[in-house]
Length: 238
Image (cartoon, rainbow, N blue to C red):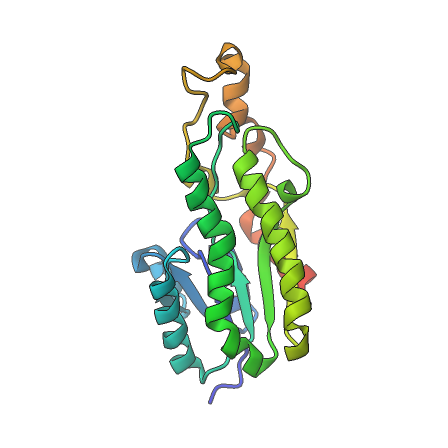
């Protein structure tokens, strides 16, 4: 059996932070399992020598199938689980679509819990580490992405609870609050790229739309590979 430490990264599709995290872990000698909803999105990681696993964090059956696959490949152990998969939603609260908001919480909060439950036995076996990808917006609210902000605040609370409940198994739980990162995240975020015509804020759409779309803030974001190195260094000094 391989003596290399194993790490699984959710949401590792090309161009995102998960992609950068997977590549950084691979460069540091980890056996990396990179997951995505569709395998072509992580084919480039497979080409680099990583193992790719199909997993949709909003689908319990998909999660459990992925956990069984990793358990079989890794000898029922997993050293590091990085709950990175997430989605965004740019909208004012008064204009937010409730079903879209529910779907976001299903990915950003309940998906993390579902994945952690499924991989829990593997982490217990290795006394592993869980890293949850939070955001500064979970603590410092920014207008026009309130649903996303609330989901990250909920994840922060969930991480604290995990830390307490998993301590008896010697599992470390680390919550990392990142700032803006250069990735494809905003391009895949739900919601219009500006205010809807019937919005009570529409009179200010000329000023507000560049903020809602992320156009103004995007230029200030960190490169994803640089952010990946910072996260790993802050998380477990590997």
